[in-house]
Amino acid sequence: MQQNVLICLLSLSLFLLADCRSHSPEVVPPSTVLSKDSMLSVLTDLQLLEAGIDLGLVPITGATVRPDKQYAVFKKHGISRAYYDSSLVFYSAHPELLSKIYEKLISDLSKKQAEK
Image 1: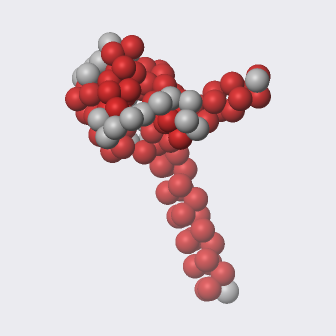
Image 2: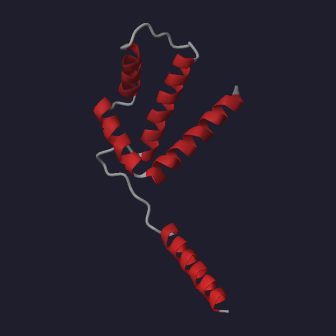
Image 3: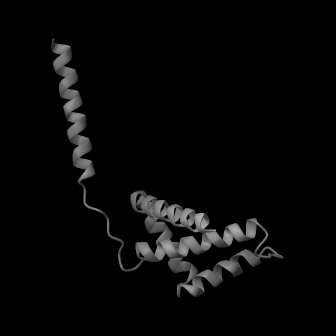
């Protein structure tokens, strides 16, 4: 009987702990980093660039070409490599945000692929 009560209390405690965690406020990116939508857009372009390079659709002829191609993506979005890097550090420190961005990225890329 005591063991059943202990198991019940332990289960209730774990449930309450999980419930409290799920209601924690969402982290809002500061103005010093890319917004979630902007980060999604940059990451999408970088993923498409990498896929193009891997498939041989984007020619590369040297070790410095890949950073040059990435620079073109940053220029398109009006950001510097340092700004992107600091944004990536922020989102990496908040995996729940980065995970949502990558889920959307995968969903968007899958939709684009299905359209072809």
